[in-house]
Length: 476
Image (tube, rainbow, N blue to C red; front, side):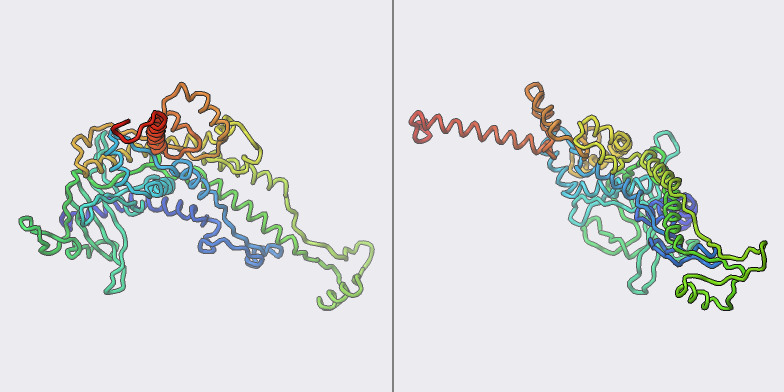
């Protein structure tokens, strides 16, 4: 791509990129428990009994700003529920299944967990895959604020290209500069700039090695990296059809909760402040007044007659405890309902509940997780097909791919085990392995059961041979 064309593309996508990143960074702040209530403290929760200015009133001194961590709780709750156990991939070929599992890596569940977190905070998460120097297939999670996709305008919405922009430190000058990569289905072109208007944009010619096609020797470097994937090597993992962060559903309620809660704490601190209003005090100095209060437990007031209003009044703060408790409880409930999560306090009331009661508690979370799974299934299928293409599978783009997702939730294991035992004789080994409450990997469980059957058969044959007086193999 020419530099002039890249400048125009950057300017045309800056607006969309800026709006997306603003929402993402707000959600990320809330995920890190840096709610709007803490903006005055640079994102840090602080308690300050003497923080307000004098113009706020003589009784208003406290300025506590402590944020509630609902955002992280709800996001991590879904990530743990959906992605603690990685989905089992089955392409109807055991050897190929093992190769795919090995390529995805032992930490695939951690990467999937991070994808759920990123998608919740940004509305979409991104995976980029490539081949390393040894030709090994690699993939990694790209921060959502680095990626700006470009789709076709037809109903297929095909991913045509990806703009990836990020900052990098120049080790020689000690200054930061921006790197802009433009990825297509054939190659990637890299540029760098420091000015916001991209007037200094230039190709990065010392970053990507170039090779002599005939000899395979490295002959220099350039700004264009060729790849043979046949598609843009970026995969979107959307959270929902609109790519909206989860925070947008509950931010208002979280802010209400923070404001009411911190206002409550402020009043608790300020209620200790009592101001005495003196009318026609007989003394001359306030110090004399305080000494008289302390020593004599009484004060002298001047009185000019029956209509005189001389005396001492108190200025205090009344705290509407019941009303604030009501608001906090209702807001807390709305956060979990609209955020489609499970309120941990609900488990205190169910005790040793049945599986049906427990599933009812997870109802809203299951709806949200099922929707996320539906969008992640397509993305994960695309990643698996990329792996199969790299492995040289002939029907990589058409082979059926089955995914089995497992939820991680509190459950009544005894009740589930009783159900499995009751239907065991009427069900396949695969169905029993999947439903077994003490099994995490049903495919590994099936393999272990098959090994146990083989070992038991061999042991039985050995016993029979011994009882028949068999010695060596020929006699047996």
